[in-house]
Image 1 (cartoon, rainbow, N blue to C red):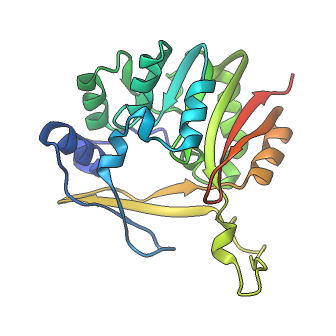
Image 2: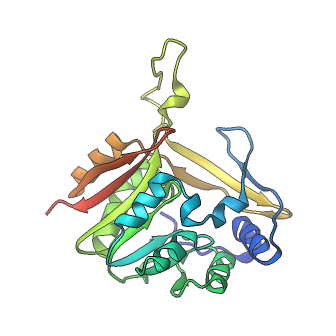
Amino acid sequence: MHTDILKKDKDPMGAAIADFHRLGKAGRLRLFSSQFDEDEMPVKELFRTFGQMPALERTALRLASGRILDVGAGSGCHSLALQDMGKEVCAIDISPLSVEVMRERGVRDARLANLFQPGFAERFDTVLMLMNGSGIIGRIENMPAFFDRMKQLLKPGGSVLMDSSDLSYLFEEEDGSISIDLADDYYGQVDFYMRYKDILGDSFDWLYVDFDTLSLYASSCGFRAELVEEGEHFNYLARLSLAF
């Protein structure tokens, strides 16, 4: 798994977040993939308040307890909501521009850090991974390394709160059956790159994982997976806890 920190000239999302924060508006944050048509990420949604968040996110924030690590914190909307709830949170992101914005918005502990870099070695009661938090795992074969990393970061009795989506609905036939070639790569593995104005980011792997597959890997790695809540569009919130 990548342990990189982005450079500002390769940080399209961070540039969009910085523009919206400082100017009150942003241009188009465009999203490209070899598997899907071009899409656009509404930058305003990255600044949503607790009341504007989807139900799964609100549930995750309520459940988060103890010392919390907010992974891929972006503009800091989840961390700010947690602070408003009186909770202790450390927000990390690999985007230097996003971290600047988080600090300007009042996130008390915002750090430029990659979840997988060896030098980041603190312990937490809750690791919070929202907005398809499974994405940063990248590929399905990285699952064991991800769970090993969680063992290093979690305090005894701690847990991971992660949301993801099951993309099998994209392979639904007219008769309602699902047609997936099991000889291919796992169907939830997607490649993306982003562009904002003249800033072009590098391509990256992103993982959407169905709950049954997540649960199988969790069990094989000494974790227990609990389906906390299901969303309206094939998404769900899971809690991952050490099984012993």
